[in-house]
Structure formats: structure tokens, C-alpha cells
Image (tube, rainbow, N blue to C red; front, side, top):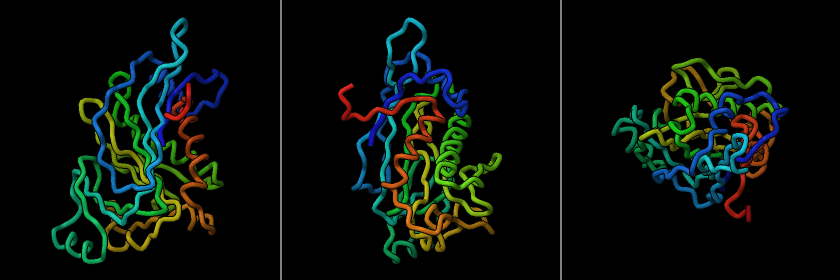
Length: 250
């Protein structure tokens, strides 16, 4: 699925105003390197972000792309900090999972059906954003999604932790890569994920914590397709943008 950012009225909600100001800069669409994501045969068409224009400027400016998919999995993707020993890799593959190395931050979370992957591809230098600010915006987006689904207790933790938590259980993992100021990778939100795959590792390297999903928290099946409209609303509110599909004639 893909998307574009275009102007939002000034009286919209205050969430993400810092990011809105950066995205409001007139920018050409950044040319970003391809991001290798976990297997995703159900990948949705990318949406391209368009930033709000300055006074007197053209009405819309593309600010990047938003890639959304539901992976096939199960696949464990190792980050720059590793996270899996050769013995663990062998054991996970014997269980039927794939294990892949990636260039993003973080350790080795599992991905699979029932999980929403969101990979924004943005030029942080042109947007005037620091990497930590971008990570915080992704966390705010996931928190807002949880609020829209009726989960008011979702929160991010202060650095060095990343992601979004419900109590002591993590519902959304975040791992970002930034090369030459271009972001790739992003967040993984558990919707109806098979949480037993997390039992074979220490999730995100955090001993004594667990994981959860929207389905577990709300005590009913919550699919990626059901969550998608709320997620797009949360992203637009957080980044102060309008998401336009590549299929859109505009």
C-alpha cells in the first residue's frame, strides 16, 4: 500500500505538530534506496507522503513513501545488534521459521501473519528531522492507533527503550535504518500475531517482559485489514499529512 502527504487545516489536532512543520517544507520526492522487508506476498501498494506547502507555493509536495504490508512468515529479522546465536538460528529454522539479517537497528523480532509492518521512506535531512524524532513519531503513531481502538493505556518508554507497550507487554516493535539521511524499515504492530513465536527468543532482548497483540488486549480477533483504516488515520494525525494512494489520479 502506498501514500502521499498534502495540506491539513491549521485547526486540526495538535498531535505531531513538530513533524508537521518539518513536512511542510517544499521538497522534491526523495529518491530512496529499496528496503528489503520480510516476505510479504500480501504487500499493499505504497502510499506517498505529500507535505503541506508554504504560502504561495504549489498545492502539494511529495515528501516520501509509506510502505505497508502483512508478512507471510514466520521470519526472524536480525538487526545491527544481532540478537541470535548460530545455535538459536539453527533451532528456529528447524521449527520452520526463516532467519534473515537486516541493516536496521534493534535485535531479532519475529514477523508473520497478523502483523502490520509500516516502513516510511523519508529524507530526514530535507525534512529537518533527527532520527530520534522520527522514531518518537512512529511510537506516537502506534500509541494513537491503540487509542483509536479503545486501548488508552498504550505508551512509549523513554530511551534507550523503543516501541509501544501495554503495561509490561510490548505490542509494537520499532527498528529503523537511516543511511545518508534516508529512512527505511519502521514498526511492526501485533494485530492477530501468533505470539508463540516470541516464546522461542527473548523479545527485543528484554528479559522479564512479554508481548501482546490487539487481539489479545481486546479479547477478539483484530485483523490487519480491520486495523488499516485506523492506522492511516493515526499516521496522518501524527505526521500532519494526507496519504494518497499511488492508484489515485491526483
